[in-house]
Length: 162
Image (cartoon, rainbow, N blue to C red; front, side, top):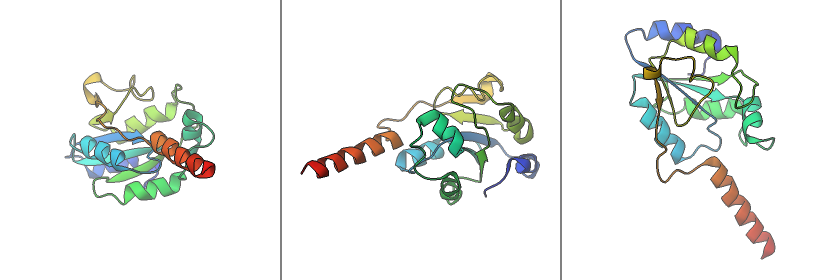
């Protein structure tokens, strides 16, 4: 279910007796690496909530040519997955190394049992108890959207030279 930030407190109430897991990401050009990651994250709880990086945040982190897929479409793709229970779009417009007070509000309203990530995340690392902040090892091989884009660009370049 795609929800707004205002719905987070009701999610916690609705699932009071279940373990709630929060994760986040861009999930641009959804691929099997994304699916493997979400399956791994889901093992930490009963209810999986995905904080999807909004278009403005993605541009600040990855450059003006990203995301490839707009935030509303990326949210719909995530929402269609059986393992994802809730998706909401990160309203922050700050860059990758900046913290926004909205993230403290997200944690206060949602009260997740765990925040699971695949790398350091300045948004939440200082806002949660260390035992509830889980950093997964990156799985090998680890396809990435950036690598897929680079591969497509190489193919396109090869075609134009042929």
